[in-house]
Image 1 (cartoon, rainbow, N blue to C red):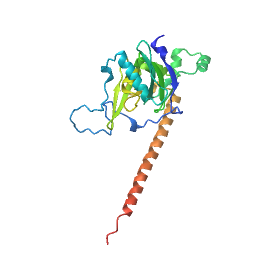
Image 2: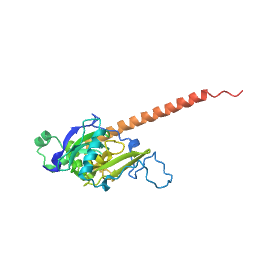
Image 3: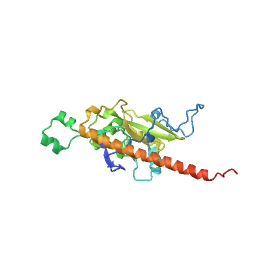
Image 4: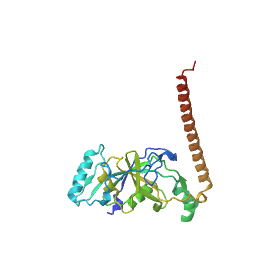
Length: 266
């Protein structure tokens, strides 16, 4: 049995819609700072709560046994890690999708078979849509499963036909009002990172994002797909406008209320 065969998928999506809001308020900068971060200069020091870089650790079998025991003691659900006799272990990881671009799905088998399309024509008639940004997937993997295998399994589960090389796993952590985002190498083992960090999602969470930073080639999409994207963007724009109107209306009401408290000079 290969490592790829270890995947046991369980649905963890919290959204039922096939669309998502591309809100800029949740975007993290890959320079490891958010908009909330102060850019003033501070002395370089190692904070006592700074997460340890798990990549630099080489754990013995006894240390792994201890960490698995400590990890399971902190888990409030049944998503425990299980230690094997050979020193390997299995467990669950949770991956959050934060994709800014649409993904492509193949045409249905009935449509493609009845139309007699070949592979090239099938790619041209594939369906594209936005995955919800709050989509979450739980994977049951082994300690030998690599990040690239996790990405391939996620795309396969959603029947996404895009090249897996377009995507990367990132480790995300929160510390002192700062959000840190670091790309996980393809040959890294996500379950080992999860074991070292513990089950706390603020210490470490896994995120799937696009690996490319170039512009979207809109000419590659069909006319119905482009119309669908326009409808999505229009709905998001309307929602954003309503949020701004409510925010300014609330601020105006507060200012009027504050003005009433000022006494008129006599």
